[in-house]
Image 1 (cartoon, one colour):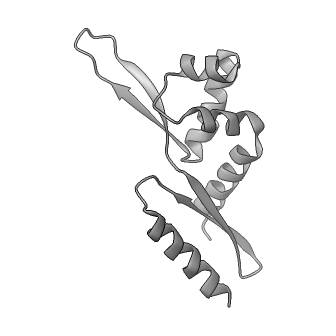
Image 2 (image 1 turned 90 degrees about the vertical axis):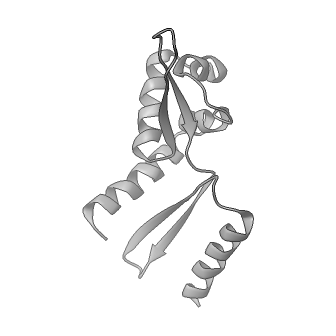
Length: 120
């Protein structure tokens, strides 16, 4: 496992261990501005930006800029994953694989079955 892989695992685990980050993930069932997220989660704006940064570092949230004709561009945040597989490999290291919205239930089941088969 490379250092960047280790950092990614730590970022995902840290973000998911944080109750406010989990609350933000639940709120992001549609693209929202940071102000909308703060309001929905009843958090101060500064805390919301810090938590969105943690989620972004973990690749759980993506920042998208909406270009508007009037020149007032809007940044919205989108949940980037619907779940995560965390595996303990060779008794030495952890691995995290994010599940995206693009994956069908059949693909997720195949991934899970592959992970289980590798353990047997």
